[in-house]
Image 1 (cartoon, rainbow, N blue to C red):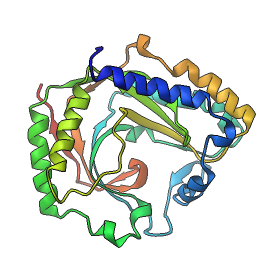
Image 2: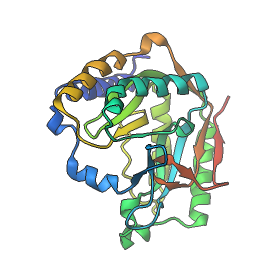
Image 3: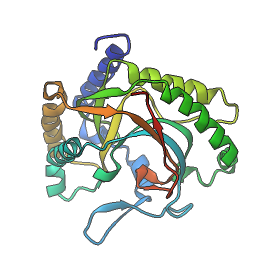
Image 4: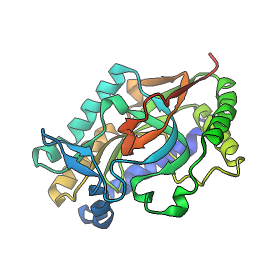
Length: 270
C-alpha cells in the first residue's frame, strides 16, 4: 500500500490531526463564516438541526457530483456511533451540531458542476449551468473511464476534525482511487464548458457531522483528547468496497436531497 499516492495522503492526514491538536478554542471556528452557514439550517420538531431554506433561493443548490455511496450497514453504524461518541459532550451541553444522515453517507469524487446556495445570487455563476446535452456527453465520457477501471477497496484510516468544525472519516487505498479521480478530472477539464470546480481533492473523506457554534476551552480540550482515539483505525481493517461511481443531481446542500430519477450508476470493471 505504501506507494507514491499513499504516502502524500497519509502525510496530509497526519498534518490535519497535528494542526487540530495545536488549535485554540478561539481559533476553532470562524464565526463570520459560521453566521453565513447558519442561514441554511433550522431546528426540526425534535430539536435536530436540518438543512432548510436560505435567503437567496429556498432550499436549492445545483450540484452535479460523482460520488461513492456507502452501503455497508455495519460500517455506517460504526461511523455514526463513533461520531456520536466523539461529540457526546457537546450534545450534552446543547451545542449546535448538524448530523449527516446515515442514509446519505458518501465520498465525493468529483463535481461536474458546483453551485451551492451561496452562489445563487451570482448571475455569472448561474450562466455556467450545463445544458442537458452537455451533461449527457460528459457522463458518457466519464462512463467509458469508469467501466475500464477495476473495482476499488478503500480502508478506513481514521476520524478527524477540521478547523471549520467538520467531523470526517478519512480513507486510504493503494492509489487506484486517486488515479481514477485524476482520470475523471482530466476528462472533465478537457471540456471547455465545464466550470471550475471548487471541491478540494486532497483527501478521501466522508463528512459525518458539523459543529455549528464556538465551544468553550474546556469542551474543546476534551474533544481534542477524545478524537485522538480515532486518529488511526487501520488495525480494525474496515473496508469500503467500491464497484460503482454514482452521478446525480444534488438539489439540497450537504447531499440532503437528490433530484428523483437523476442517479446514474457507473459500474467499474469487476
